[in-house]
Image 1 (cartoon, rainbow, N blue to C red):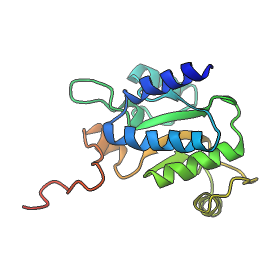
Image 2: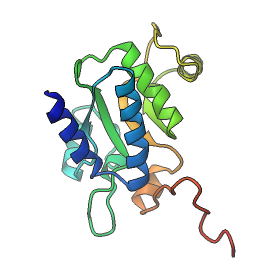
Image 3: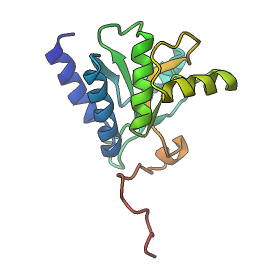
Image 4: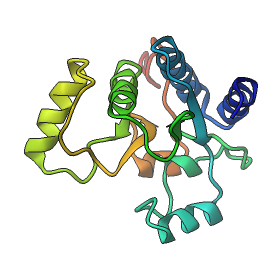
Length: 175
């Protein structure tokens, strides 16, 4: 994909995201670009039909997930995005997925890099990610390019709860 096309795609996909998640994702993308990567948002919001197709194909284990979040009027409000390395979309390098996981952590998100791993391996990989290690040679989880907001559950998101901007007092804080 040309650089202009990649940037246009990212800009369009960012419009499908919850405003707080959008800011987090913009920080992640900028961090990856600063490291010389060319991140591409493959998917942000998904329709329920697309989610069913992803689950049927084995790309998701959920019938409703953060990708499916909408505003009350049905406008896309995704809390997840699949962020591929545009130079290696089908086989991202370990340095890319490790950098993505680290930047996700820094920006209040997580990736699927730990998913499906035994506890001891999740812990070891988590330490490597937090430490900025990029040459991890061990096993990684089954969806390392998936990025999602941390702090609310899928049930919360489905019920319309959204992340608050940093520094925003919780509801009824002064009650």
